Image 1 (cartoon, helix red, strand yellow):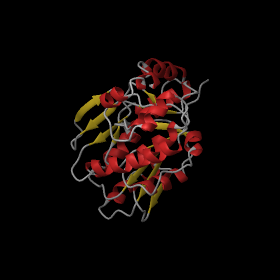
Image 2 (cartoon, helix red, strand yellow):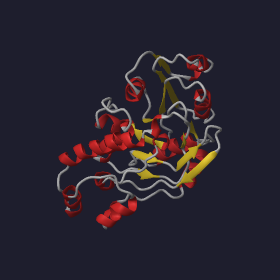
Image 3 (cartoon, one colour):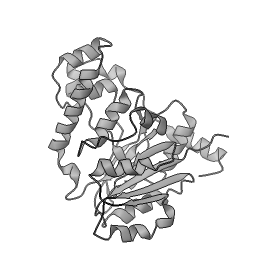
Image 4 (cartoon, helix red, strand yellow):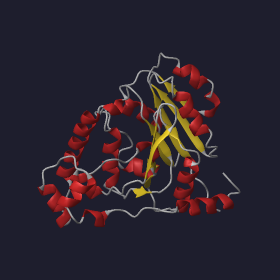
Length: 286
């Protein structure tokens, strides 16, 4: 019988009392049977930890104390994680119902899949769905060309072996582009598999770090440039990309400059629910 993997989910938090309960419940209501849930709090003073205490028994670990930022908080969480599959969700975002069943089932059924992302889903402060879009195929060559918008972190999960292979931690020197820099390192070893299923949702709200888009792009482009300098010229496409000055590019702009980019795109899983349903039946439900 195919077994579901244990999934480690880290929730980093700092003073997000208005949303953290919804985040926690969105994970617990998945009823995923092999969940390793970890809270990493940076020393909140707004009542967040009082909310967390209501659900203490659901957590494998609760870490609370000063940290140096999101990357440090997530690293602390993953340092005590035990799951074969890993991901994190910020304390103002949510998982979509059935998201972890999709993730666990697909990793169980696809032994060669090491890294996946679901549909790009966004909600507002009242949990209303704003957008749901197919995940764009993002290859390593697209990343090197400056076409990286966006791999939704809330919907992205990977195997522990891949995490360990790239150093087993987020880059704590970064403030914003910690996810994108991790995707760059993952792309050295494996393709990101886009899956046409909802997993997580990003919440648009006032005062969030993502409003600093210009600063995010500056960090990401610097990380890509470092990656480009270490990249070998393995073929003509890579050579053309490395010979062209780096800048942030839309999909249309990138493909206009490098017409063969799309030939490198990983194929999407367009009907994952069939596979998920098959495994659920074999396990007598999740």
